[in-house]
Amino acid sequence: MKGMRPPPLNKGVFVAWHHVRTTVPHDWEVTAYSVEDRIGRMEFSTRKGLQAVVSWEPCKGEPDRLTTMKTFLQNNILGKKSPRRIDSVNTEDAGVFLVGWSEDESLPCQAIAHDMAGAHIVRWVFEGYASEAGRRNVVRPVLESFDFNKDASGCEYALHGVRCRLPWDYKIEDIVTLPANVMMTFEGEKSRRRVFLRRWGLASYLLGTSDLYEFYGRVLRSLNIQYELVRRCTVNGMDGRILRFSALREHHSDRFMRRRWHNGQAVIWHDAASNRICTFEQIGPEKSEALAFESVFPGLSVS
Image 1 (tube, one colour):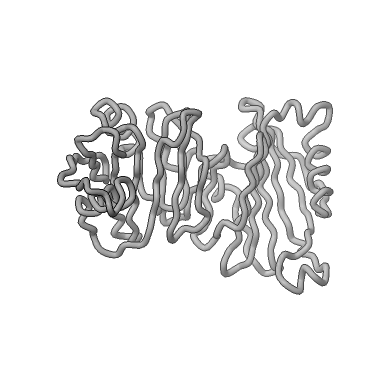
Image 2 (image 1 turned 120 degrees about the vertical axis):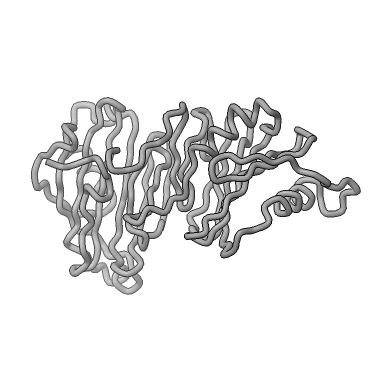
């Protein structure tokens, strides 16, 4: 998307999540992730098993990265009581990371970087890539494509085919990943405004003889959402619809009393080139400020 820093031009899949922005090999899939931005991790796997783990945690000062690597290998791989000791680790730089590996290529290859501005440490652990070829062909491209997810305009997210940018105070509330059906929910800490991002694959099959409004209407009715079509639109030339809706409030007694918010805004569009249907919904308290579509999806515009 124009306006977002483009992924590096090596072949792979672009991923952005909390403190991480990088490109990983095309056959790596995200198989586990944390919704917590303070301390968390993501796991990448293929049909052959676990390939890499990236984790983050608070760290105000620059750590002794070499000692940290040795300690990790000793405590987590060999075991604290193992008679074998890690005496040396070979190192090299790759992007903002220090990469470390043992002479024993069966041990994981590690990489550590410190984000001084964000006061976080990011660590990669690569399984089975400690050889020279593994570091050259996999480890270095992943690390050299990496940068800290710290744009002043907001936090970028790119996972399971959904890509957006949201203000920093919007936190992940829920994520559902089903085959060809992804939904992410965010909520503003101050505004209490909620954002829903949905993405369906196999659009031609889902639509059948229906148009976008008919398809989306069935989805919204199943969620007890009352809606009305405002107008047809295009999103970068793609067929779309703009709707207004009301929905049950999600907070405490509001939900119990069946109270509704009435200022919901939604955009749905059909990306025929990728055979996907995407939606952006937002709703919140009456005085909460709506997010501009173009700020959430830089490079896309509604007309």
